[in-house]
Length: 314
Image 1 (cartoon, rainbow, N blue to C red):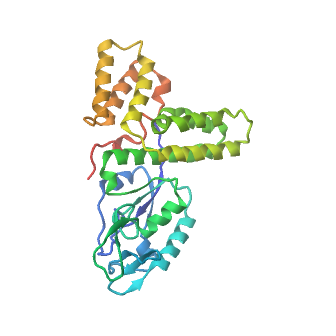
Image 2 (image 1 turned 45 degrees about the horizontal axis):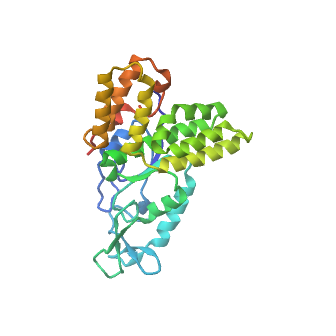
Image 3 (image 1 turned 90 degrees about the horizontal axis):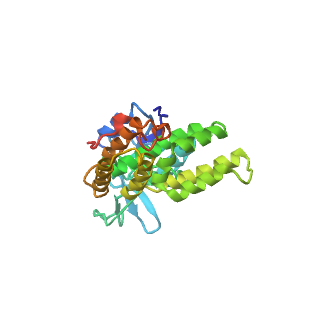
């Protein structure tokens, strides 16, 4: 199966340059592995807004009138500089499929960064999001946004990878004609079912085009529903429903013991005892055995390159 290369904005300090405040670079095995399969757009907002390497640390402060970016050692408030850089940079990029930002960073942190109650206080009192990451969420609310720390989690990583590679495929499909969009929908039907059966149904109705809408209108409506669908993270229950649906294609050909083994395996997966990959491999054996061309082309079984299908990443 061929894969389009997703375009990912990444914090430059993650595997690209030693530009952290302390002059170091962050190692991330998932980002390093992705370099062979994605096009990265590295960015360091703190350097981009004018700070050097190394630099005095900055923090986010809740001043009462809003969040401020503050450098305690110099006493500088850098909020305006960060806002200007963020707006300029994000307006300059297009055809992006997702973001991987530095966790716990006052600029790039996606979740759980320290927020200080005042400029003088040295103890954080609540969690929040970095200023650059907040701009990303506003400008690209529909795109996958994660940090390299959270991507160590198997479930979070699977959802992120499936989303960015699906969006990359969609970018190619939407640039083509109506048949390209139909092909995308057909090959991604089980994957979309694993995210939201409800949105899948609506997307199918749009493509039926009973109202005879123009192709550009169809593409726009379909894209909106695709973004909503991808915002719904998959979960074991949805995946099990999809795999039960797939098993139905082989129900007359498999033996009773095979079906029992598969159902027990699904139960183990649903209860967190084994990864999704084990169940998918069992279904792939049946796809090969019964020569089911429709299922063989479903991205649900191969949503991203095989080399990225690791159980753990450091």
